[in-house]
Amino acid sequence: MQVEKNTSLEESKTKKFDHYIILVHPHTPENVGFCARAMKSMGFQNLILVGEKPEPFEKCRDTAVNALEIVDNLLFVKHLDDALLPTHIPVGFAGKSYGKRTKSVMDLEDWAEWAHQSQYPMSLIFGSERNGLSQHDIERCDWVVRIPTHPDQPSLNLSHAVQLVTYALFRRQLLTKNELVPVEELNEWAKQIIFSARQMGFFPHQGAEMAERLLRSLFLRAAPNRWEGEWLKKQMTTFLGLLKSSKINRG
Image (cartoon, one colour):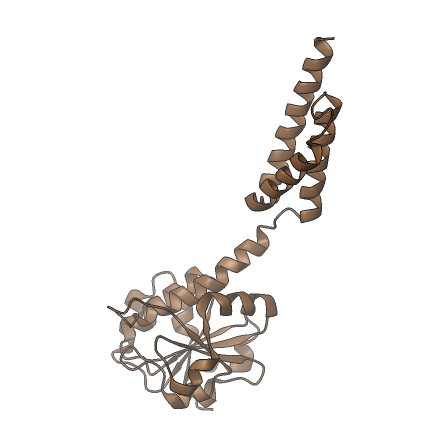
């Protein structure tokens, strides 16, 4: 492998995130800087450039706002095959059809969900601003992901494509950290509310079962996270306490 820095691919694997961003023959150094900025904003830091360095390369530092460490540590290789690790799944991103290969193309959101659930380390491969990925590049990919665009403007700026892809993955990490209240707990909420309501005289003959199902459905569709769930539990406890107190005071 022809790498122009002391940093090796294996050494860079020890960084916090496993995914690599690979730019194949980028044309402008400014776009490389913009890509570094996009990566940094979503928590990615491993960047590889395939082909010749776009010159004057120092200009990429002008656009890599708060992401100079990514530019300083990026790797240069001559060919795409040199950038691919056997431990990483190569994924190509495209905005057009590739003939018979189209049957393997995934939607960006569907792929992001699969990638998040699988937790496999991946090499995320982006083509040049002018031509995208070649057929040869696509053949090196286990997955091809299409970023949909309006037909009036079928191509994206390179850094915009990187931003969309990294955001799609980062967003799912946030959702995981922002853990939702389990279904079992939502079921228990509905049971407790209806049980308390019946104790206070609601649903004397019928309707409790339907009310419980409706509450459960409302809670599920609201999909409260843990923080929201704790807040709701406090409010429900206060509300039910007030209702019980009101009934006792009325005799």
